[in-house]
Image (tube, rainbow, N blue to C red; front, side):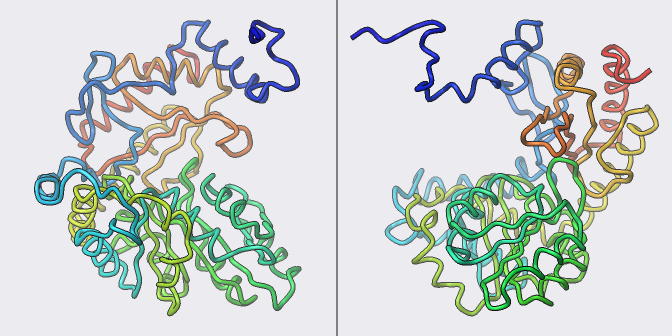
Length: 411
């Protein structure tokens, strides 16, 4: 039987029909000559802040490489040594043959970094949220979460089949109203993020954790975008706001400040270790390669002494935020709150044009669009690095000014 083709193929039974609006939007942008913003190729990475993109030396302002650890000599050397001693991979899960000495050392580094009793390393940050949330909150339990939570958080909720109760972003009163309506004897988990990745804004964790505890809820905080940078010791917003000892679980990733790949959960809960036997995304996933956990452990230990880098990153964030505001761009926050500075675009078409104009000038940022963004916004998301020099930040501002005027975003 010959399969159908053309327009007739898009019948009600077409499993891809639900993607048609996205396909149409993409094709419309590309037809207007805009380069595909979601298919950029880095031909060569020169440093944490520069790469060759489309044959051009490009400043990187959209990598989440907050602390610039990807080219740290000690980190690279640790990866090389592990690769030579233990090979390229484990070919097994953590509960079988996939736990090497390096995995234990990486978890030890995390326990030391956070000052907590338990640490569990996952193959990605996505899997850390998916695994921990779905395992500890199941059918009959309630999850109260900020409506702007990351996709991995929502997917963890769906996998665990708990009752999901969202509340308005960073609204303490709305969160308390939701908690008040939940049966007193029900299992309750409140999920928050230290820094929200789209706008770069910070959660009022101090007040929210207090409300959660008032109603007997456990608290999980995703510190993916604040680990290494925010807080006196780089432990995140929970440390900065003085509630790290009141949080039950902290989720994080190695793909931001740590500079490699992987995810983790740290906790002081006395029963935490049982999760290694009942958490499906941990039990049924191959463990990270020895070279990856070696680089992660080395990076984490160096981040413990990263005060100077943290201070410079804050300076970069303040300089970029003030500069873009002065040029007339509309930003996601009134003042710098993190290493993320989000520039709000009028719509997707002009956002894509602005993204392309920046790239042609030698600057890479993230183009973020609905449904990933809050309130249907199109954003140019800038993530600063501790390795960006003051001169590079000034160059970035000059590029934004030229591109913004060319596209008509600013006068």
